Image (cartoon, rainbow, N blue to C red; front, side):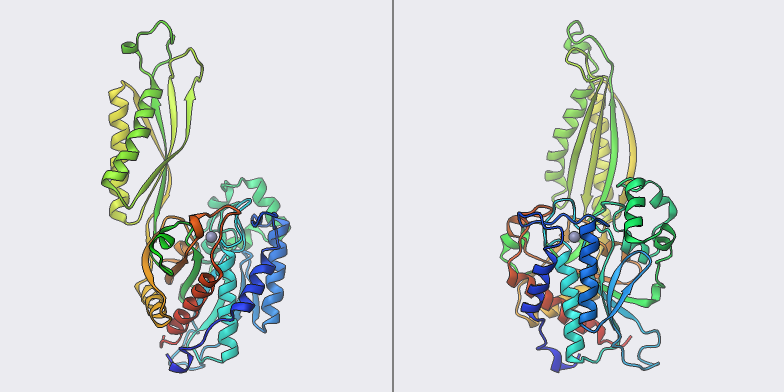
Length: 423
Ligand SMILES: [Zn+2]
């Protein structure tokens, strides 16, 4: 890296002006935004982004999955140093969860744009192109990681057939945005065209705040699995069947729910498990529950813990079912494996934090992010900045402005480092 650019910094005031302008799209009046994918507010925010990209003199690119990019062709034209003209991606997402906060995703997109603008103005010679990208539907109002999965070539027609937001919502959204299913499926980029993907995001937890640390360098994104467990008992008269004679599905399911908290805290301190729904049938005051369906989700940072936790949870369900004389039906609903981040990206972030004299610590992301989709295709790295009180997916979401600027400067310096290496 050319030493002359070590002192390069983003413009705090320009980034702030963008941030405040963007927060008006879908503003809910309480500090939050309501900007679900392809809603009018989301599309208006994207129209605004297109204007900013053009105003900055950057090349506007919109792909067939609706991903929006500010592209800067700054690769040194040398067939030896850069035969394929690789691109380093920086980005996040402009869509929000329903009635969410104004930092989640928005900060990452605007910081990426600011980094590319800063590099362009300074005329930094790089060996790669830079691209600030706003991925479509990260939050999953429609599909989830739609834009990044499309770029990575991971989406199939099957994924779009029954998306989590429902097919009708996807059809209506695509029509509003002028995007088609075929377009989404055709948005894959050649694997060798992307050198890396870096993202700045708010932490959405309070580990950085508690540790009074400036920057979290993400070491991995947790794996997530979901199961539907059905505890099967027998319906009986709740008044005439003795307590000993019952095969009460609610007892076994409840024992399981209580037991897993202790199990995870004791044996899997890096992991979490959640029962987000419990349905009792037939569901009457005077009938012993015949069956209980439990929605189980769990998350782990490493493949080893992920598989051991899965075994331990299912084993516990079996034990509790047997203890209460119940049957157990296990339905696997799907999973994303834990995703380690790239060492190259982590090291670039560490060097950037050290140069900027910012404290940093490694963190595992308990939430999913677009980077997961790109792992395997390129070097992926993420940093977090502190969320006040850990609040996120809420209008209470807040990050101190200096922390936002710190994150953008770390992104800038890490990008300069990675994009100035010979490819
Ligand atoms: Zn986000």
